[in-house]
Length: 126
Image (tube, rainbow, N blue to C red; front, side, top):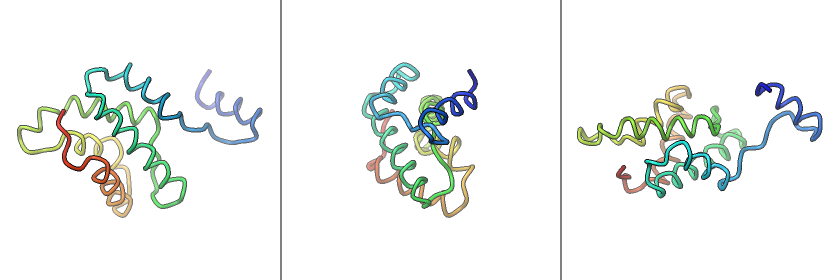
């Protein structure tokens, strides 16, 4: 069943046109399976950022959503880019920009950076 068919099926029975986001517990399981090599505290903080981004998106404060798929890409990219830390580049922020920030307007990108910094202060080590 495609994503579109799944949403149609869900909408038929709930009257809603979109799927709800997974719970933090469900996303913890997904990230544990997809990226077990990332420290648990980093994965937990990533899920917090994802939920803060979603809250801002649903409130109309930013113009890009953050799906579970993007969350998993972010975690994988962060691990891939961890070597950049030796050059003074934060792999968490760098990966976040690659999977979400670069797709956003300048105003939204600034808001995304604020959300990220609020959750990941001080800078994480992976």
